Image (cartoon, rainbow, N blue to C red; front, side, top):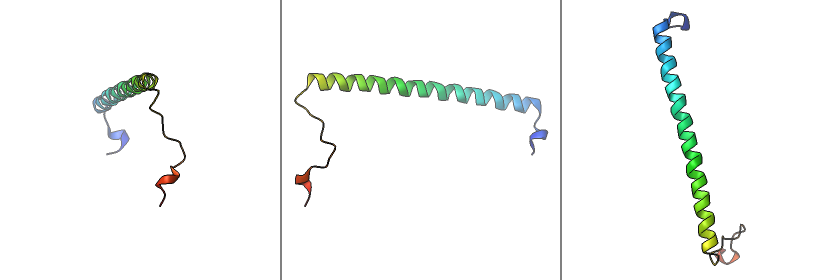
Length: 66
């Protein structure tokens, strides 16, 4: 089947499905950003409430080497 053999009803149906898919993709992306932002806020609040807990150094701990 070539593109020229696709009739208008099929094209319209494909376009509707594509529009729905893109809408869902955008909602999912928005949700991902919302979850990420909330997680960052929670992590910052936790770090502020627990200053004794430090992040590990970016360099590997020399004591762990064999």
